[in-house]
Length: 180
Image 1 (tube, one colour):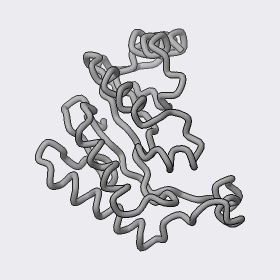
Image 2 (cartoon, rainbow, N blue to C red; image 1 turned 90 degrees about the vertical axis):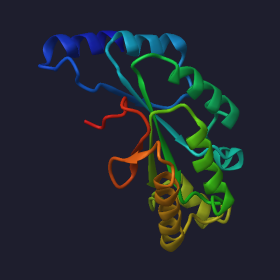
Image 3 (tube, rainbow, N blue to C red; image 1 turned 60 degrees about the vertical axis):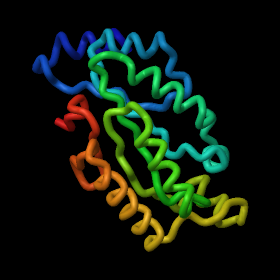
Image 4 (cartoon, helix red, strand yellow; image 1 turned 120 degrees about the horizontal axis):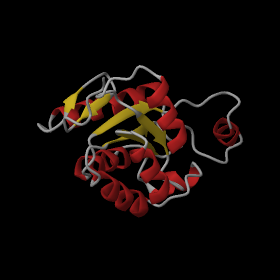
């Protein structure tokens, strides 16, 4: 990873303040890999958290516990000049009412720089759709339910003066999350 980033910096006409984002999951993002990213010039980390709810994470086959994710995000957020942004999805099976509200509350309590709130897409040939169709899993949110969840995220972050909206789905809390 470090070699790829060094090669990109050497061979591409990048400005000194360009945003270099590494996207991934916290699962297996070791300190060594994180150091290689930062040393290679990564200044923005985008992590696909999806949800903090333990039951939904298990159902969606996400391996890390909410406690681990929270602790790791706190550790990573302490790295100087590294914007930490997470993706949060709404519309998962079982993610209604308080579950979504709790996810938003956890995000607001974390020392992260930004959050994206996206609707879950259930594709026809996906394993999730197969589980839903076979009755092994509750259905995902309806379009109306997902719209309500989206509206709740907008109302939630709009009500917090330290968050500002960058796009329809993207919110920033600090100047590190520039969205250039």
